[in-house]
Structure formats: C-alpha cells, structure tokens
Amino acid sequence: MTLTEVRTLLAEFAAGFDASLISATDAAALLTESAKIERIAGALTAVLAARAADAGAWRAAGARSAAHRLAEDTGTSIVEAQRVLDTGRRLDRLPAVAAVAAAGDLSAPQLAAVADAASCDPASAPRLLGLAARGSLAELRDECRRTKAAVDRDAEARRRRIHDERALRTWTDVGDVGNLLLRDTVEVIAEVKAAIVADRERLFREARRDRRRERPEALDADALLAVVRRGADAPIDLAERAAPDSPSFVSTTSDRAGSDRVTAHPAMSGRGGRRARRPRSAAKILVRVDLDTLLRGYPTGDEVCEVAGSGPVPVSAVSDLLGAGGFLAGVVTRGHRVAGVAHLGRRPTAFQDTALEWLYPTCAAEGCGNRIRLEKDHRLPWAESRITLLDLLDRLCAHHHALKTRRGWGLTPGHGSRPFVPPTDPRHPRNGEAGGRAPPV
Image (cartoon, rainbow, N blue to C red; front, top):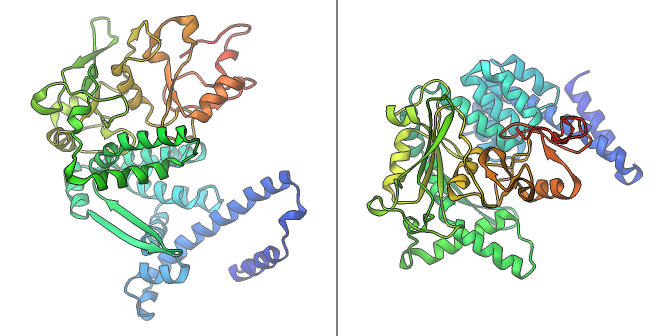
C-alpha cells in the first residue's frame, strides 16, 4: 500500500467519523490511536523533508531555502520548518530513535529534543528515550540540554555564539494576536524571569482576592508589562531583595566520618558584598555548580554548572550574574547531593528553601513539569515528627499536593523527580512495611 492510499483511506474514515456516536471510554482509547497516527506522520514528514531538501527540490521551486519551502508546503513557521528538517537529518544517523518515532511513541517536540541531544551523544539515546516515555516534556528538554553540555568541549564558545545570535522578534498571528520572542543565553533569560517575580506574585494575590482565576502564563505577561511600564523612572534594585538570612551560596563538604555536611557561605551578591534584604516573593536566580567546577573554571565528567530550571551555563555566566548586582543564590555541591539540615520549626529555613529549589526546580511528581508556586511538603507530618529535615522535604504543585493530602497519594521513596502513586500501588511508601509506615527515603 502506498502512502497516498493510506492518506485516502484515513481521509475517508475521518469524513464519516461522528464523535457523538461513541462513548467517552471509547473516545479516550481512540484519542490514543489518533495521537499515535499524528506522531507517525510527523516522523515521516521529518525524514521526507530532509530527503527532499538534500535533493535540492526547493531550488527548482525558487524558494529562498529548504526551510522556506517546507514552511510553505506545511503551513508552519520557518523556525518550525527548520526544526523538522534538522530532526529528519539527525534520524538518519540514529536508528534506535527513528524506530521509536516510527512506532508513534514520540511527539514532535520530544522527537526534536531527543534527536538533537542524541546526535551529540549517541550513547545517551536509550536513557533519553526512557525519560521521554515516563517524564514530562520540560524534564526531557532539561536532560537533553545537560546531555549536550556534557559533551560540549567549549562551553564559553557556545555562550558567545548564542549571545552573538541574540534576538528580540515581534510578529502578529492570525486573529491579530501579537507575539514577542526573546532569544539569548540561559542566564539572560533567567534574569528577565527573576525581574518579574515580585510583580507576578502581586498580580496573583490581587486575582485571588478578586476571585479571578488567571493562568500562570497570563500573570507572567502582565508582570513583564508592569516592569516595562515602570521603566527607568523607578528601577528595581534586585540587590535589595535578598533574604535577611539567606546565604548566596551553599556548599556541601565531607566531614571525617565521610558524610556530607552543609556550609553556608557569606553573601556573594549585592552591593559591597553585604547581605541584601528582600521579601519572600522577590527575585532570585538559582545556580547549581560543583565546587571543583567553580574552582577550576569549567566542568569535567559529571560535574555541572547550571541555572536551575533553565539549563547548563559556563562558569563565566555565574561571574557575570554576580557582577550584574542581582540576587544570586547558589548551591555548591560535591557530586549530586545536598546534605540534610534540620531545625525544629515547621517552615523550612531560607537556606533549606534555596536547597529545595535546586533539588526540585519542578514538581517532584514524575511527568509534571509545573514550576510555578510549588508547595513544600513534609514526607512525615510535622505534627508527628516535630522536625523539618531537608532530606524529608519535597516540592509539589497544588494539584499533586491536594492528591496527597485529600486522597492519600504519595511519592515513591527516593529523591528528585519520581513516580507519584495512589495508596493501592505497591510502591506507595505506606506499603513498604506490612501494617506500618515505610521508610521515608
């Protein structure tokens, strides 16, 4: 059967399909099949587009480039068309990724992210495909960025290249919808995001007071506009927003017993090196960097230097953030662990807040990419334990926190992003020991 015949049959099926005649249960099952068909078609489009581009068909059509020709043929943007072309060319060298894509198990954004990272490090393909199957798109993209950064031998050159290609674009969509796109290095975008935090939280409180439900993206847009309108007449001094008891850098070292110990260093941001003060909702840029990386000036092996929730950055970016005078919070580690720090209060300390923000840039529930207004959760109820220990804290979005509180769902034992399961699941922490509470970690 040819591809044209497949398309004709599918078109005939769609023309005679009436969703109102099927049950809700059947609709959910058919939705899964429909999504797979769309994904398979997307993978085919990518490889065919790459083949047509390499054959030079776009030149014969008088197009400016292969991406321009594909954008015309598919009705997409030039940026999206170029992404499809790049993905198609990479799949030719990644048979394992191509096989999963052909089965309809990768969406277009997932396929683009995995193909991009695996083309830099082919050995990472199985790991990234596994994450695509169980995690959120945000988690997958974060891991793909880390994978590429780990094999990039010249992070400084990459940073200069991205900076040289920086751009601010505006355009109007169908329906008179205005768009604004800022492209720059990770740390620059992090500065912009940090600058709107205070206004976003103020707008959120106003909406809640007025009993209005606003999407997080809408609040971000309103906050950015508020900052722009305020302009140079009333600049926000981010250095004045540092928490009074929040160290700019937190490090872990090993004591004589071989266990990790957390040390709070003096503030490294703000004017004159002094500690600045800020309300709890004020701006903060969180950077995680291994101690050896910080001392050496560049990472090796599994070491990292990254803006939490955004991706890897060279060490020079950390220096520039410090020099810019904004409030920079850093988690300096040895390896992948921040050791536990306990106190007897119910709320985490400012130090623990910083460590938690690094450990959980998104909701701890695997597959949830929510980054907005995450709630701190005690694994053991504070009323029972009377202790707040970093190792026994997680961050959950409002939805997953409500599921835990009201319906007994829970995170499986461990740290970082992990499965969030109902009480009947054998992996639930309460089911770890017959008739008793499972170990919390």
